[in-house]
Image (cartoon, rainbow, N blue to C red; front, side):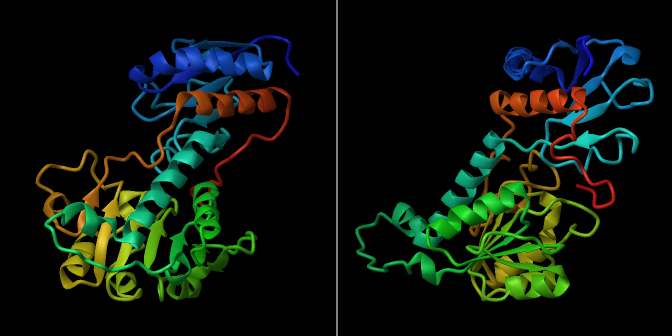
Length: 314
C-alpha cells in the first residue's frame, strides 16, 4: 500500500463541489485514507477521478496515472462510452440511493394499490365505499433486479405483495421474490401484473423495453411506474395505451429529455403523474462514504466495489 497521499480529482459539475468538499474529506478520514482532494489537480498527477457528466473532464487521455473513475451516478449509460476501457469504472450504489428508491417505489405502489386518488380528489360529499384489495391480491412485477430493484422487491414482498422480478440474466435472489430471466421470462413476468416497476439499466437491449407489444401483456388497466430511465419506455406507445385504457395510470420520474418540456403531452394527461427525477438522488453524505471506501480498496490493492461490466454496459 502506498505511503504517499493519493491525489483525488473532483471532476463533477461545479455546483456539486460545495456539497462534496466537506463530505468527502470526512469520509476519507473515517476510512483512514490519506488523500489530496481537489477540483484542480494537474492531469498527470491524478490517481483517482470522482466523476459526473457535465464537469470539466471529457477527455481522459491526459490522466496517465489514474487508477480508476468513480461515478457519482447510479446510471452509467452516458459514461461507459466515454471512460477508456483500461480504466476501471465504478458506478454509485449507496444506502441513500437505495433507501430513496425504496421509499419512492413503495409510496407510489401504495398510492395506486389503495386508490388514494379517489379519496383525495373527490371530496364532493359522495360516500364511495370501495375497499381496496389486500396486498396479497395485487401482483407487482419489477423489471430489473440490481441493487435498487432487489431492495424494492424485498420491501414490497415484506408488505405482502406477490412480487415477480425479472432480469436479463438469471439471478440468485431470496425466495420472497419470484425471479424470471430472458425474453420468455419477461413475457411471463408482465402477464398478470397489476403494477409494473421499471428499474433496469438503460442499454441498447433495454431501450424501448416497454413498447406497444409489451404494454399489451399485463391485464387491462395496470399501473406503470418508471423511476429507472426515460428511454425504457416508448413514449408514443405509452400514450396510445393510456388513451385506450390498457394502462390505467403511469407515474413517471424519468424522461428522455429532462427537464420534461412544458408542452409534452405527459403533463396534461389525466392518467399520468410526473415527478421531477427525485426517486433516488445521490446524497453527498452517503455517496462520499462509497467513494472513500473504493479509494481505500484501490490503494490497498483490493477489488473495487460496483465495477461496471463493460460488455453488459452497466
